[in-house]
Length: 132
Image (cartoon, rainbow, N blue to C red; front, side):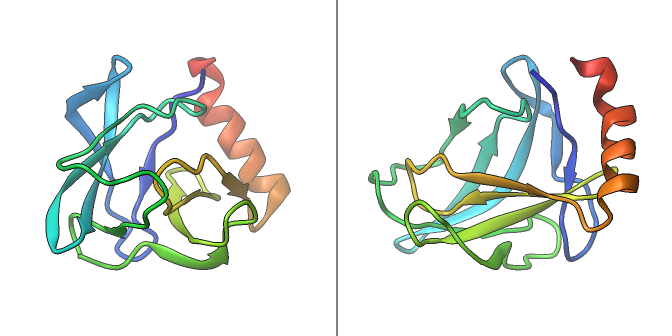
């Protein structure tokens, strides 16, 4: 599996949390909100892993709020999930491009996009080739 490094698409600060590990690697830290509750969500940084740590229970099928822990920007994108219709949540790759995940608990749909495919795919490959 490839470990990805992501940052906020608004303030460009890293979302990686080296002190908190999932799957043996630094986790991705997001400010989560649901039903009036707020806390830190940790996502595995291994692409293809669905391991998460929730600060509180969220029922399957429900939609949560996702914000940058640094600038508090809403991370939901304009894209709707092709599988369930919920809004997607966007993170920028450190080396260019973007990954989007579904905001609905339990939906595993995700999308990787590159604005400039040739350049960003090459940078992505160079950055992550050693992780494979």
